[in-house]
Image 1 (spheres, rainbow, N blue to C red):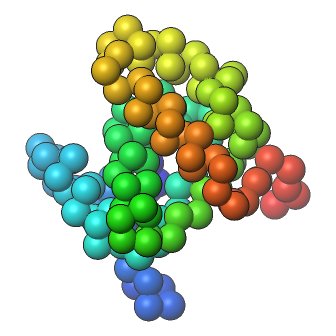
Image 2 (image 1 turned 135 degrees about the horizontal axis):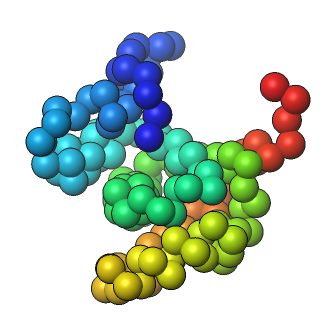
Length: 130
């Protein structure tokens, strides 16, 4: 998760869950509400993204809001190939091996969400000079 605080910028309210949620607060409800209150969600995929079940659950919620409420979703691929996200290869494949042991009931839902998100037009930041 990112580490800046909530701020107003060009009439955007930026919600960064790491700084917006109080320790001990029920994360899933607060995240779901933040997602539902948003008109745009930027999802930043990196090699460690799939290790977090919280990120995967949040992605499922974001995509549900996209389908139901027309929320705009911008996938950003940071130093990872979009096809690795889409097909759960590389670091994503390894993460899902672990998830299969602990959360087998969620694995298919998460894989479908990753596939759907990776199909959206997004930005690829693998090759950049700054």
